[in-house]
Length: 249
Image (tube, rainbow, N blue to C red; front, side):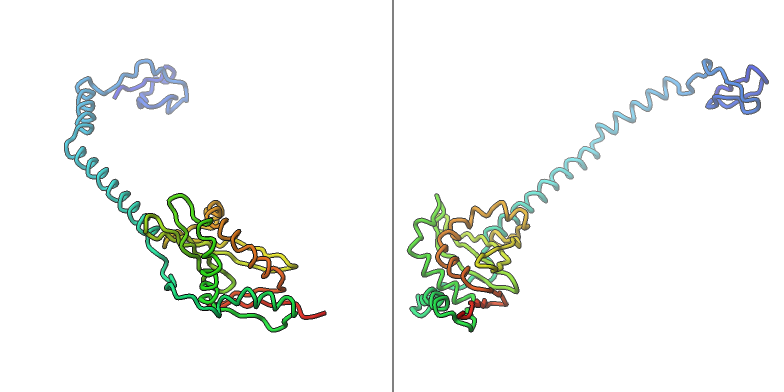
């Protein structure tokens, strides 16, 4: 290493110093020369090029990219499979029961007679009622390449899950909208709790953007929504719903 001699005190200083170690005078660094020889530079360049074109490193990179593609492809396939699988609790298609078609009449009677006792229905009863009431609107609810088949509900604590089944060339596709429904001052309000496409859960923020999927079904149930909105309270529990109406004045 080149030593830097102080012009003031003549002390020898290390090459990396800027000021003298003893007197603090500024050193003349113009004489500092690189200790790296041309051969060393060539060796460093050779090593750098070897790293760039090292066959082992190239194989590792190739394996990494192949493995990344396999992992990404597997994740995409898993997501598609989750979207195509039906929900875990899909009810079986039952034959029509005439008694279930009276739910709409029971709601109307409860409003006109000011029924005090709450009306209680299971999610299976409401699902079968929806199957009957929406059957006549099947063509209107069908979309291009997606034929409407049915809609059913599942009640949880404080929450209603509406699932729509549509057919794509004979294969059933399911989409679920989870809503926390409240009834106050003759108005129904709902807070989105997320949903699912098949068995793939959908975050509530993303589900709000896909409400158009269920808009036609909610519109087809306008009569039932108006009847329910005339009640005073609605409560969802596990597999059941209770509707309360105002007593007679």
